[in-house]
Image (cartoon, rainbow, N blue to C red; front, side, top):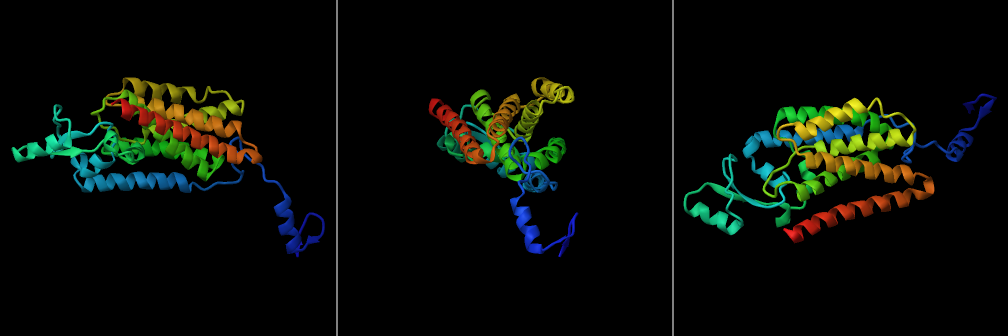
Length: 277
C-alpha cells in the first residue's frame, strides 16, 4: 500500500491515477519536469570530437575540413591549405595542374552535390577560440532552453537553424568562400529565446544587451559570416513560432508537418541557387 494524504492507496490505484492526470506543458508543447541536458552535452561532444579530429589531421589544411566545411562552389585548393587557384573552375582542370607540378586538389561544394555540408559545417571548427566561444554559448542557451522545449524539439531547433544559416550563406556569400562553425545554429537558439519571451508576455529588456552585442559581432567582426548568423536567427524565429502557435496536444502532428514544410522550403531555396549558378 502507498501512503496518501488521506489513508492508503493500492499500487495499482496509484499507477492508474498517474496515467489519468494530465501533465502540464510548456508553450512549445514540451512536458514540464525535464531537467537533464543530454542533447546539449551531446552536441557539444560532437563539436569537440570533430575539432580534435581536424587538429590531428592537419588543422586548417585537413582534408576533413575540405569535406565538411560549407562551400557553395567547388574550388581548386593548394595541398597545404594556404591558397586556391581562382581561375580553375573544374575538377578536370585542377587535376591537370598536378601533372604540371602544382600541389593542388579539388574540393567539393554544394553545387557539386556535397549537400551534407549544409549541416556538417555547423559542427566544424578549426580555431580553439572559435570552438570555445561557441560551445560556451551553446551550453548557456541549452541549459535554459532544453528543459523548457524538450529534447527532440531542442535538437530540431538547433539543426534547422543551422540549415537556415547555411541556406543564406549559399545565397549571399561568395561561392568560393568556406564557412565553418556552430554560430548559425546558436543564433537560431537566440531567435527561439526571443519568441518564447514574446509569447510568454515577458519583456525583452534582459535579452537586449545580448542581442546588441551579438549583432555588433555579426556585422563588425573580422571574418564573421553574417549570412550564417542572420539566417540562423531567422530560422530560430520561424521554428519557435511554429511550435508556440500550434502547441495543443491535438496539433502535435501539425507542428511537425509545418516544421517539415519549412525544411523543404530551405532545401528548395538551395536547389534554386544551384540551378541559377
